[in-house]
Image 1 (cartoon, rainbow over the protein chains, first blue to last red):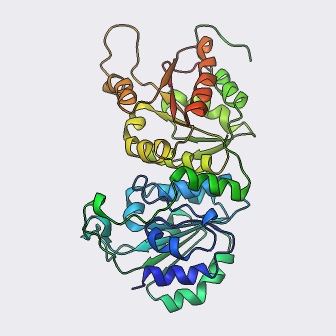
Image 2 (image 1 turned 120 degrees about the vertical axis):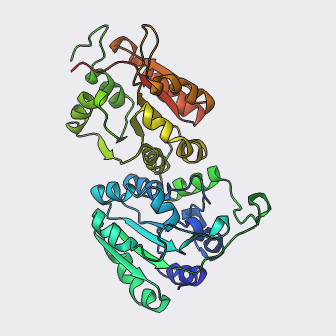
Length: 196
Length: 168
């Protein structure tokens, strides 16, 4: 099992100018990122949609690398998105998956078939150009620079320790310090696009 | 292509998309929109993004919109209802000026519709406070431009309900 914060520290060394959508790793990423204007720590607008949203950004911005930290609970809500991503095959899309085998934000209940589902195999079967699986940070650290230099779409499934939250949603610490509108405006300015 | 008063042609709808500088059509085909689908496939200026479920269309289009391009979502009313949480969280929550072109399955001006897809469509949009326009013929297609204007003005999704089947 991999510690999400440790993994993000490794990733931070190689993010370059990528646009990063940190998903469920957001609370760690906001303290690690050296380019917050290229980050979209949106928390959870609607579960199941992160992959499609990040893919949409990759389609719209083919000159930018788009990196998503998705979760397995999200991905199984919308598995069909993988076939759409594979069909359009954006070379600039890097799909990292934080697989903690549970619904950590609702108290840690098990994900369906949590220990047996191979998301790298599913992504490859859907038609992703490449897919990898890791449960050891050292192995991932050895490969991450190469993976980020490959053309996408790539899925990197990682077994991570669950960080279970049991507090009522309204009582949880708030780690986002910009509004979503501000984050979007910052990213659009950083990549030089205007809203149409 | 000359418009045909009283009928809705896919050319007229496509013309509105091009006039409004749409870059991507995020769609899940249905029987009513097949003629339009075939036309769009031949249009070099449009990037067609085929999705497997309508909620996915909303989050995909939201990402395209944040990336500075101009998508339109093309789905049926049945799928509109499926996409409720995605609409709430992605399109509305991120203030995306998306136009949703929605096949209004079951809509009729004659008598009572037996199709619950039609019964709940406008109630669904009203519950989400999403404004909408009804298009039933080429005479109405300028409403699509109004929907684009509204969406931009409000930074919110606006729907166009296609109330008839296209005539190729």
